[in-house]
Amino acid sequence: MRLSFRVAALVAAVLVLGFSGSAMSAGPVKLSYSNFFPPTHIQSQLAEQWCREVEARTNGQVVIDYYPAGTLTKPKDCYDGVVQRISDIGLSALGYTKGRFPVLSGVDLPMGYTSGVQATKLANAVFEKFTPKEFDDVHVLYFHAHGPGKLHTAGKPVKSMDDLKGMKIRATGNSAAVITALGGNPVAMSMPDSYQSIQKGVVNGGIYPVETNKGWKMGEVVDYLTDTTAVAYTTTFFVVINKDVWAGLSPEVQKAMTDVSVEWIGKHGQAWDDSDKEGLDFFLAQQGNAVVTLDSAEAERWTKAMEPIFVEYEAECAKAGADGKAVIEFMRANLK
Image 1: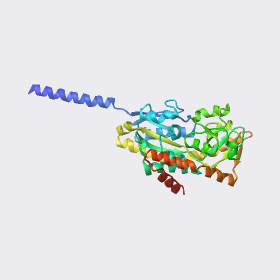
Image 2: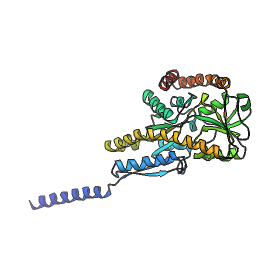
Image 3: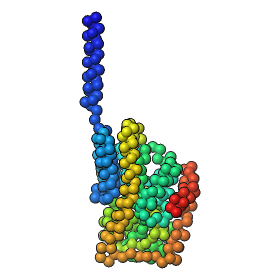
Image 4: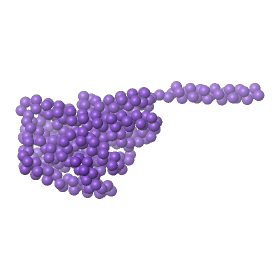
């Protein structure tokens, strides 16, 4: 009887110590977030605010270490970095890994966008509608996309497709196809490398959203902005989390993270538009900088030149077993 009591007491003590040890060792889930935007950029600030909001909504159950400016993974390596868990969460552009995201890259096509809010809504709508398998190796949190991408050049204004012939223009993803269709020579490079490349004449300019003139100080090294709304594309940015990490989070934490992500979609879209206005002001504040407007006939010529890009997109989707035509039709209907 006395032995049984001692055994029971020992078992109880072990259980208490076990639970106590678990409680003592239990702590917040620590995650890492990789992003290529510099810490001063509004999109980087929003990403960091997302981290802090997730921490607040989970009552400290999640703590996120934020790594801006590509300090953890470079822009083109960010997605694979999340898959391989170099970072738990990552934000980068689809266009930095051309061909990797055949369906959602359709959002980057020259659809004639007028705002970042519009492009951001469309990116999330396309993903929700088609749930492309290209993202099966991560959990998608949300997407956002910049306002109309426009042509910027140094030293020479571009008023027609003829002016663009022979010029080397920084472009990535589908924007590279836009430059090719217009007769220019696209040069792929990430945004952090673009400033010096334009400044040194390695390239003659870039095609990018107007906000970049201030956000990345590009307005200091270009002289002309061609109003290319007729062929305005966007660049879609993903925010994804490692699939296994996501599966290991509690339902309450998953819900909090999802709720914050839904709210941040609108914040990013509006921020793109607000910063486009600031980017234009910054561009025009530089001595000698000017905006070039295409006449209607030339604008129509540019739009017509885009037709092969849509055909090529459908072909790329077909190779991946996806219906590119359905995506294009959905996007055009959505934009109306």
